[in-house]
Length: 291
Ligand SMILES: [Zn+2]
Image (tube, rainbow, N blue to C red; front, side, top):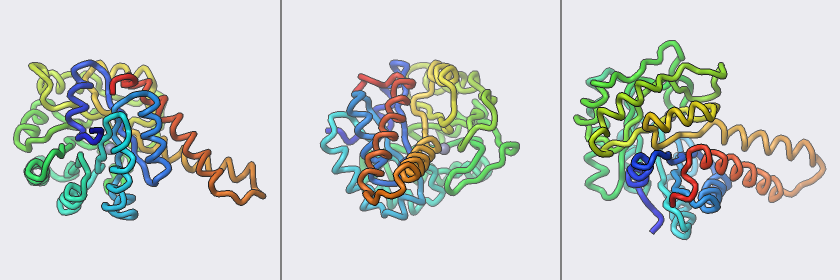
């Protein structure tokens, strides 16, 4: 049984101080590459789609690919819907077979951010073995449906985080701690490691109940990643890096082989480059051999 929800593999990760890589994909090649990398590294893995590619390919197509690839993989695989602001679409993906759903109401006021996650949690728990992720505070940068300027970014308040998780019933939680979506403008972005550690202690100090998610993985240095692991990060989202890998690899291949008309070779190049990038992340997150 290799199809899992995010919480079950994250609880194990949090207990043992490693993290699960959660990789955003937009097509079949990337999907295959992420699972190939996880199989090669014997690592549990999360494949995630943001709302746009999920709607573009269709939920049933996504889930069919997921079930085909994950069903025969000898490692646990979760399919996660990332940053969805629409309750109905969250429910649609849950019905189709996604195994983790992120409802993102974080742009709304604190009180208004409670109801949507609560509704999605109730729905997913009734529907079956589906875990739900929510976010408090705002992660800066651009994410599919959510755009936040860096100076508007607000970090998660620890006390409020505990109350938020209790009132919503979330399975996994993404507190804003200063990481950002997209490409970091500086080599040393301001990340509040202590805030993550405090929230982790308050939520999971007496046993792992609600493992924590770090958004904005792309561009974080290995030093930062190790500190975030130590502070309780149990899932790292990596999106922008794989988009760049896809587009840059295609561009470089086509530029170097301008007279060749063999799409399969471009696909092989993209799949290889993506697999290598994902394997590197799995090593940094210390989840190799944990499947
Ligand atoms: Zn994110």
